[in-house]
Length: 124
Image (tube, rainbow, N blue to C red; front, top):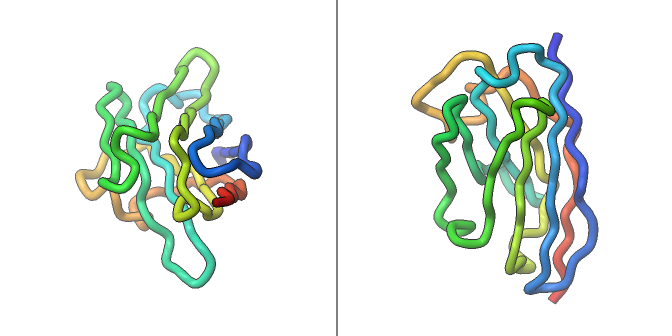
């Protein structure tokens, strides 16, 4: 059983920054495909960013140039640096991971492990 614990959310003003973290208990974290998703009230969970085991990254268009996904395999931790925050970034953010690579990495159904979620609220 793999445990993901995400943290770092909070309240920020528009234009501000927050950094989320995701601590993983998996001994083979370095080989996991990892991602961030978010879910706003009344909306479906949506893909935000992806990091392959080799460090390849991908972002949804709305966060490109503002958010950066990274991972520290020595610490079994993934991060999401969020800059230039906008009110529309307000959501519960979830980290997700899976030991198996799948090309459909924007699909939440492809991930077997999830964090509990951390609230990000951006005020205008």
